[in-house]
Image (cartoon, rainbow, N blue to C red; front, side, top):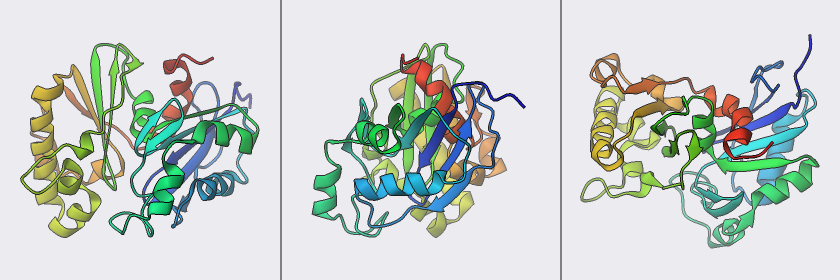
Length: 255
């Protein structure tokens, strides 16, 4: 079987797990993806070690794409959730971890560690790269540990906004309203109705041409809620969190 070059190691880093696979230039995977639990506490160097761990045994690759939560600009971490917490999501923020992550050039460190060209971006942007049509204004929302988001205008990534931190109720941000913690506490039917409320609230803010709903928890949205989604909303597979790692290079204007 011919594997089309370049081969890309695609790594999807979440609050609960780190997944990786190697895809050819057509986005075809020739090996079963690997997953490991996200280790905590998670300093930048520990994440680099985890990427090596999850990629061990996968086919050779020519470059690497890594998607991670938070505000990532040009491969530099401006801010990230979960990884600055001592024991992961919803635990105490560790000031030392926050200091290590803030301003960390993950893209340069990853390229140096694996000795291949690297692209590091927000995980929802990587997810979106795998599903968008490339026309009009497209919004991607990923439901997992928290809410991820990414916007594309004519296939070009727009400046990243942390929509998850927008206040939603008197007491909660969007993240606190529909995160994994809330889904487990409320159950899927009530949580699904909350998802629909959030989408309805974001519609007049973004005025998208198409909205893609993805992430690991998108499959938990109840059929009753899915039936009430408008025609401009598409639910997509969570596998895009990996497959988007190939197309992300072209969308970022890199060869």
